[in-house]
Amino acid sequence: MQNYEKMKKDLVEAFQKKTNEKPALKNEELKFSWSNWGFGLESLDNTAQRLENNGLKWIELHGNLYGNDLGYKSKEVLETLDRHDIKVAGVCGMFGPENDLSSNSGISRQNAIDYIRRQIDFCFEVGGTYMLVVPGAVGRTSAYDESEFERSVEALQVVADDFVQAKVRAAIEPIRSAEVSFNHTVADAKKYIESVNHAGVKHINGDVYHMQSEEVNIAQAILDAGDQLINLHLADSNRCALGQGSLDVDAIIMALYLIDYNDGFRFATPVRSIY
Image (tube, rainbow, N blue to C red):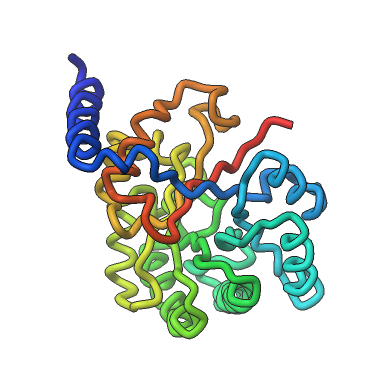
């Protein structure tokens, strides 16, 4: 067998052992959310109707509060989602060169701090449980210098208390090296979290598309993330919807059950859809 086949064999055996010891596990469903930025410019009402029609109860909202005059309004969001019996899982933070926690520009770092505070307030108001945080700008693959990791850590520490006060969990997301200059793996995210060293920044947002590029094995990375993993973005190997590529979805599901992902507020969140 090839190494990935050996890993899959071990995974299946561990899963079978767990389900044999706890047969009721097979009836305990994962919590499925949906990241609505994947629906483009579609109105939130139309998206919520689409999710309701397909039996989904949770949504991950686009972190689109880029300024005081832009983005969602909490009251309107709650009214819309209530009509469709949908609750907010969390907020997908969006980080680029203009709001880069690791930037060598103080203005950009301050923009990132202000941006995060707006999303935290919004997440609290709509009942979300986490906010996705990317330590460096998506779309910038070259490092500014040798200090970007330390600058990012220091900038996030500024708002770490805000996460605790709002009871919103910061979820650090590793991104593939083709899109960001650092923080590519679960191990990298753990190192970053350890460096921030704050109760408000303890969790990880995984993305299986990025994981297939950077991790030795996606299922093993999920096991390594363990209790720190609170949200998992799902897209297939070609970044299309699940079922449109060659991703081993079975292995991912088994790994999630092995870390008791079915317990508490932890979500599996597709980010690509078929219209």
